[in-house]
Image 1 (cartoon, rainbow, N blue to C red):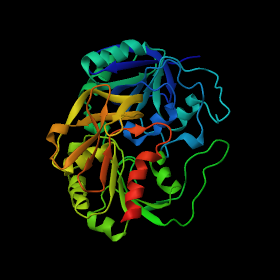
Image 2: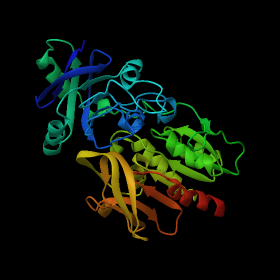
Image 3: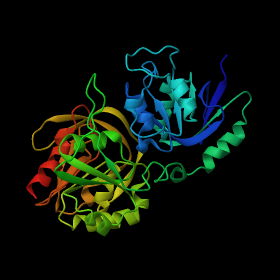
Length: 368
């Protein structure tokens, strides 16, 4: 027997469907994600914090979930919105049904709605707050008020997925048919500023000769330098870059330290702010896979995964910044570096073998 659910947007638009996951209600920013696969990675990505994720692909859950594919230790999204949740799963790596996974982590979702209509609505009107409520005869007026009164920053507060203490990461990249391998002593040392880091952002370093120390985003520049790293990594994360003023100040100090540095996602935006740049809010964000990005130097195209609400404005950056990558969708800045400095940034995350971007930092660490 199915339990009804209702999605209500802040502008009063209503979608009726079937409840999945935990019964109750949840509030978040309604965004659409174009990924056809990797729904577990999206749900557990700290950058998804505060989002009610609408997958445009109709069948979500057909390959189940497993312990190895999570990008963090729990589901980070505020809720899930899909067209169809298959009853059966079919994948040799599956360990659990998506429905049971959502219940285990207390995530409320809705299926059976017209996600094409919802996606068009977001594209035309912009991302907005929404409320999912399960059960018969929901109080629509109250749900609308909840969505209207919830601020986006309340639902994407940084720190929810960040570490509170330093820890060492020793797990390499995944190989088919093999468990994750734990690495031993490594010749290089990279310190990761955790703004909402994913596990797949740490593995390339461990796989390629680095001892990895992850530190909280509240760690000061002198404390980081005192760890004597060969290189620094600013991770991805959630929320408005403009609210991270304290972190930006520490990043500015780190750019003066002469330690090689690489930043992705939110980390790249905060690096841009530290260099004097500005960011702008995207109307409905970029959330999904197969986003083409071109390397200016080589002309090669990189297919990337994007999960961002904000964009660093190229024209706001100083002359010391050199653009390295552009989006082929809208020609916006996707990567940059500093002149005569080992400081690099990339907005998205490369799909497939991502080590070539991490290699620029690793190579710089070897030469210092």
